[in-house]
Length: 573
Ligand SMILES: Nc1ncnc2c1ncn2[C@@H]1O[C@H](COP(=O)(O)OP(=O)(O)OP(=O)(O)O)[C@@H](O)[C@H]1O
Image 1 (cartoon, rainbow, N blue to C red):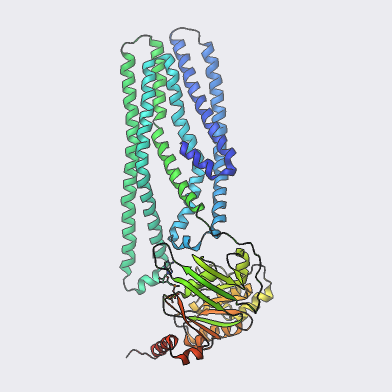
Image 2 (spheres, rainbow, N blue to C red; image 1 turned 45 degrees about the vertical axis):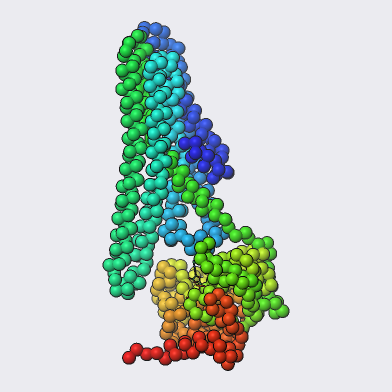
């Protein structure tokens, strides 16, 4: 309970007033409830012993009014705070996501990010309610127990010992169940991931010739989730029942103690009634302790995501193209994925001139894609520097870097929206004429013409209604419309049909005239047409220069070229 209050206080600094209102309101409601129980007991005892009940009656009425008014106000504060906290949590996540390092996304299965947003919302809205419920279950019984000392010390003693015992036991069980609950949450996320995989990767599953393998993975995940949720439920039930058992035993002990010897019947009856009532209210404590524990676990997961260190943003807002300086320059770059793996680059230095087409070539795993990630600052080097137009990318603001560089990946993802809006993402404010010109340059107009709705035709989730080459052409149009002076393009490895291939070749030719085009090139035609080739192997630049020069040198690039040419002439007999 206190831990939950501390988490709410720390996570929502702007909502502290709401948190304080809930804390004060819950405590006041609890005091009002205890006062009502005690005054009713006094009234009962006074009536039974033919005393003067007027004083007790007035006190009971005042306590009832205070209790009802404050509890209504607290319930209202809880609802308002839940809504505000939900909004704020979504805002905090939305603000944080664009700044998170790409390594965070790489380390998370897709479902984990989806689940996080949902869990965050649930935990944020339930936090105030969980705290108020826990206070209303735990505090009134303790206050009543203290007041009972005035009526019957034996009843008081059983309440004051029984309740802490019950809470202590539940807390112990909750601490154990938190671990089981974390394991259950992992299994839930795994199921989400498998379902997403199963639903979106049907083509891969079917073309593997083993459709049962996909179902098998799904079934294994479901079985694990089932086992873990049963374990979690078992722990929760044991915790709740153990606490309730202690309270039941306390009630039995109270009845035995107050009856031997039975002194003042009226006072004893009143004491037993409110003592039993206090134990009944306290029976809700184990459940609320569990709810508070789960909410803290969820808030901690959100807090962990929010406190993920983000690469600091730079301050320089521009880096104009200057032909005297390289468009891209890397010096002494060291980069490792995670802590355990070998470095991809260890002291890499290279430079790419302004303008023309530079082809980055090399065997699989040599570091070509990682090079692009470093230039676009999707990752930062552990040592060394990456500069664009002479300015270290870490010095530039994110938006300045983004306006300098457009990236066209190999595996383009398009949003399930119209062709036009997918292109417009590159520059939302672009006018119609420029948008159409960019689409024409990337030969996307041909694609739009094929759709019954033309430019408004939806491309399906991920762009699944288009071929790989067509998706890349839409992505190129998006990059053209953005008008960045540097374009990084990862050429598609899979064979494109002739039409798509010539379209992409034409587009590449058009683009190299007025910007720096860097292509991870897989096709020999693209490499042969490049102005400059950088040949990477094992994270090092082993050769660079004009393609003809490299071929004539007869070294590593020439070998690679030879192998590729021979592979092209292979045929299945
Ligand atoms: N997210 C990642 N986490 C860990 N290691 C990675 C990650 N991405 C790439 N690697 C490793 O880094 C090395 C360089 O990978 P990279 O993708 O840059 O090579 P590449 O030349 O682009 O390969 P390909 O031509 O097959 O796409 C490889 O050993 C790869 O296994």
